[in-house]
Amino acid sequence: RKEVEQDPGPFNVPEGATVAFNCTYSNSASQSFFWYRQDCRKEPKLLMSVYSSGNEDGRFTAQLNRASQYISLLIRDSKLSDSATYLCVVNRYSGYSTLTFGKGTMLLVSP
Amino acid sequence: EAQVTQNPRYLITVTGKKLTVTCSQNMNHEYMSWYRQDPGLGLRQIYYSMNVEVTDKGDVPEGYKVSRKEKRNFPLILESPSPNQTSLYFCASSTLTGKTEAFFGQGTRLTVV
View (cartoon, rainbow over the protein chains, first blue to last red):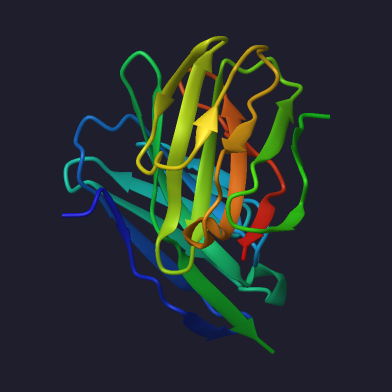
């Protein structure tokens, strides 16, 4: 089983749609979880951290299920500018950080 | 402004010609790392450093070297580049725990012919 798995997509959605991405991780010792956004050929940038209780930032909602080792990202009211690749990132700390990246899920929002 | 600066942004070189990609951060982060990104393979870690003079191999270290003589700088060295090292490279820095945001440089697109 791969360490961090994501559906590569692409997810093609119209503007205004709600879309959800899922991610599973294999290492139960993982401690911190993130969603990063990457535009084509540009550097990844933090979208949001993911907390056990779930958290929301505007149109974006992230959920974490430690028992199932599953992370999700929900985007409501999709905008054209949301078109990007979304990377699920898992951190394990054992004296130093080990970040493991999923391969990303591509989202294409069309007019 | 928090920043990771990589240079050059684009580089075309020939097989066997040594090159260095520089990386510098201004956040006083202990942890720095290099990744390469290839289509269908995602981000793969090449080398990382936990502090000055402390470096270790990541998942794909073959053909690369690094050094960490100063906290802010973490250059990536390709002693004898080969075409299979054609890729998009990112430098990143974060705190040692990794519990907060990792910052990435803008990337270096390397082509080895």
